[in-house]
Image (cartoon, rainbow, N blue to C red; front, side, top):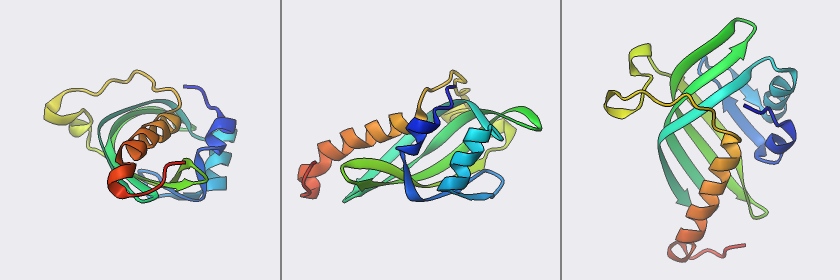
Length: 148
């Protein structure tokens, strides 16, 4: 998975709170620094069962993901359940909060026991922001909000 720090920088809110599966809290600058230094490398992210709720200027996304990461401890594959919050600023969706819980090994797959794909998803945050933009535009009339 490409570690595109420049692209990532444009997708994160200045007030980002990123909580890893172990409970470690990182600010935006700490998270970007971790990616730059490759302290933690996301080799693949395969989201599944994602549900998104869009509100006026805010989107809440919850789902599962099969992760493959590399750190000083080696390569690790595991499943998570995540919650992410996006805010709409200057016509763009920005990730402002992320929290993930590691699933027990026997629950790492998708719903009904199927195994989640470990095929890498390129630009996971970018894909999420694009998905939110589509949902936002589809629901703008119902929410009575202007679309930029």
